[in-house]
Image (cartoon, rainbow, N blue to C red; front, top):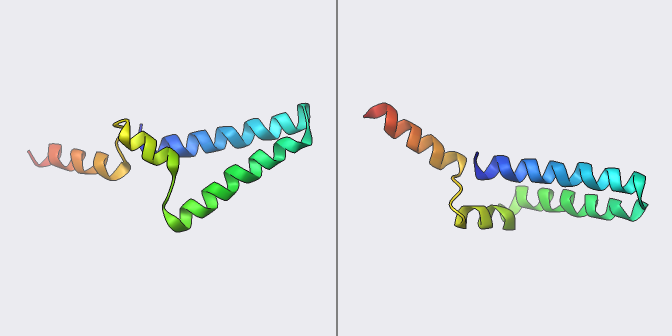
Length: 76
């Protein structure tokens, strides 16, 4: 599992959860959906994602790190 995949999985999960809560509990949960969407939008332009930073510091590899490791294995 890579940083990028974990970010997408959690963002999608939060969006689905907040949509369900908006239907089952209160429509104000849609503000959380908007917050997650806005963060995804801004990270596409700025490449700043707090979750990605935390995951990298925790030692989760990025897609490029995983690809480089795979290329090193194939060349040896």
